[in-house]
Length: 388
Image 1 (cartoon, one colour):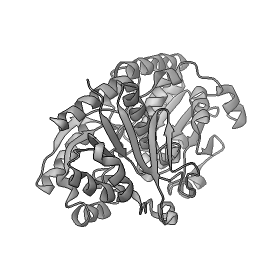
Image 2: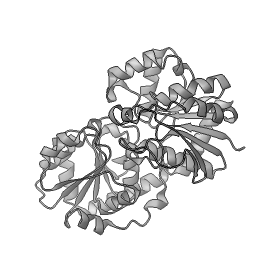
Image 3: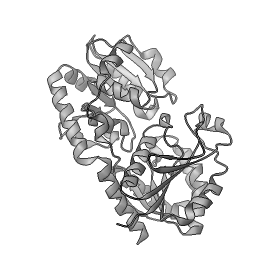
């Protein structure tokens, strides 16, 4: 296959890991495509977290990938409303896109798309879009999303050649939405991936337990943004129903509105550790006996894939879009309700041998389906499809 020049557009990129799984997903994909011989440019902003901007260079090469960052003119809007103000993004796009084969945009309703996609249209560069689980009106801010689609994205929505969904459920959601637009792009399903080697020999679990006074009992790990749709409030209530005095719940992730709500409900068995960097995430996974994500709306959680790659079994909701986990023996799927969660939590924590067997099955499950090399090969075919 001849090498392609691929430009990825995303509101945030490494090391802005505080913005969640999208950052890790885009980073993993572009690095895998680079390893396969393609030329990659990431066009992004200087977002680092909701308070700080990235203090590195505007243009740099990370792991062989060119990264160009537009400056947020009003960073306080990003912190308060998660809204970018990249005023120089259009100018950057005019310099980057003329020799591009494909523009791959990540997330649908972004200021970055408004600035860059018209440039791509003028230059005739085909556009592929990955919504990353944020497409439907039911996943939060439905009225605002509908208004955005009507007023701002009216011209852009016909420009999408292919939508790359993470799961069949997300593909169905995209079809339903684009039917209301009167235009139907091509639809493909390509999951997120994982670098298995990063999780081969985890260490630091004992240190993590000691640092956070977790004792020797079973550790349940939640790792994600503290957002209502992640189901963290339901998990806290479920844990309160457990009789196991030795079990511990570790809540890891940056606050997005739920910290003040769940803090009064925490008991002495629960600890919030805040945002974890890459090294600390691995230590947390090494310490964990079970990973739980009772989300009401997800694309395909990178944190779930990380847990399974680390041989940690998972307890998920249907909203995580991984129904294959339970028949594979890698975990359980239950409704995100406290009483529904409490029952499998109790059963799983009471049987360490079963947890270990499920963890091994989880690792095999990910290895067979979700490595970045497999995902990158699938994405190459998506790009070739829009070039025909």
